[in-house]
Length: 77
Image: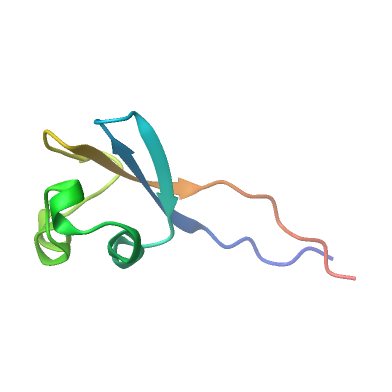
């Protein structure tokens, strides 16, 4: 028997200063690791931006992309 597949959102932050990549489960989680000076936008402004798979956010400090984590259904024993 298969457990129902749950789609999960993933938010990818690419810091342009060092080309590092960071992955988060929500927009709020980004701000647990980075502050507005590090990524160049506040939490409220990023929420208002309307980030989506087709509409990434980009400034001189970072690129923030939103996508879906692809998984396979778990087998229920």
